[in-house]
Length: 591
Image (cartoon, rainbow, N blue to C red; front, top):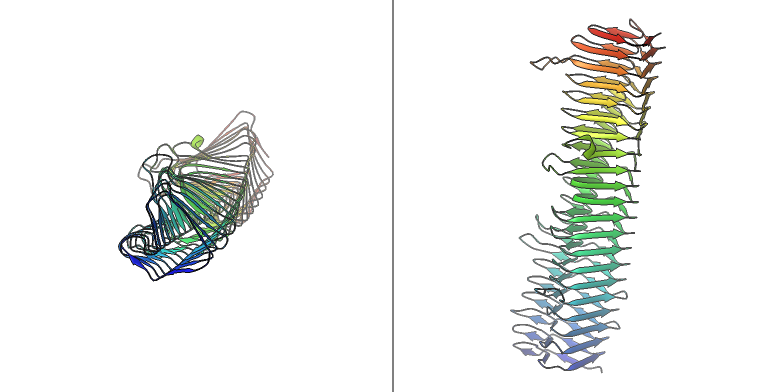
């Protein structure tokens, strides 16, 4: 009890050397300024049954000059408790503060591991991995701190190797860093493949990787990790400012806060191909990506009951940028910004098995400088593989598709309300080129506006639109053509199933629907509109023609059992203004 073990030197274990099954208690003592020429600057305990306990003691300024464990090297049991401090130790290889063998048992309670450094892995703590299950068991709890440590390859604060078990409860991992010149992982801490980790009521903050290609500013995961009520904030890396999920990793966040993290991609979280992410009842706020995925960049994501706000990406997906398998339920996105998809961007073009499904979402006041103020999607193979259902998209802005922008693929909107969105073209929705868009299930596009064409919906470049299922296109407006719907460049549209296109306004022409020709394609495939069992009523073309419908040259319009009534035009064609074929069949009404 008490005392000091200072300034000793040995090949291994500068201060204490244990190679037998013994128990050592160091209570209220200091092991400082010792040197291990190889490993274990202060303590070297290389026996599976050896146990060392530091109770309120200090291990400081020790070094392992050519090996691991600057402070402590142990392969048996290690316990730090009651205010123990392991600090300012140095290892040339792994474990600046502590090196833990592949089957060791470690408990750290109400203690601190800080200001240590390693030339390899685990600036503060390194737990060596095991070849099979049943490796190291590490518990860190009770307001313990892993802070201001520095590593080189992975785990600035702590690195846990393969097939281990980690439990962290009520602790802080902060201000750690990696200085790797290669692909460093986990400035705060990292876990290897096959390792299972649980983190509860903890903070992972202000960790960073000072290298262009580093990943996982807060933590890097290649095993299984569950985080409950954890704050991951103000971390920085090239990939995954807050969290990196590796190709073998699975991360589940429940009741967590991920905020103000920064990265080139995946400001909050980055998931590699093969990695899986589940986020429940959590908040992602203020994260930033210099390329894509301000909140999350991922390949496999399930997001439920969460709130994403103020996330930004310079390219795609202010909130989420995803590929392959993306499922979003009952989640709110607000004030997100990006070039494409202020809230969500899906790029499914290169992955044939991709699937996107979102339901019960609220997306409001998001913005994109290019396409999709809230949602942009690229490359889904068919409408049943990409669907947004029973959601509200409002007050979002973009150049093309104020609410939603679909390109080079397919998308279904079912039971979706799009209102008060704005764009240059396509106030609510834009689809181009070669895109299939299905709007059904009582969807509503209301009160949207476009500075140019398509106050509600903008369809062009050989795309196909179907609006059905009692959907409603109303009270939208634009300055040029197509107050409700703008259809052009060899695109086709079917409006059917009790749909109403009503009370829309175009300052120039096509108050309800504008059907315009293709002027650039050599084949000159006509633009086609079919309206069957629907109504186009109360629309207005203020200064020119086609209050209800405008049909341009080389276009084909077919009306079957359709009500075209109470529309107005400032010049000619209050109901229909046609420069080409209009075919009217079966109990249609023009009034």
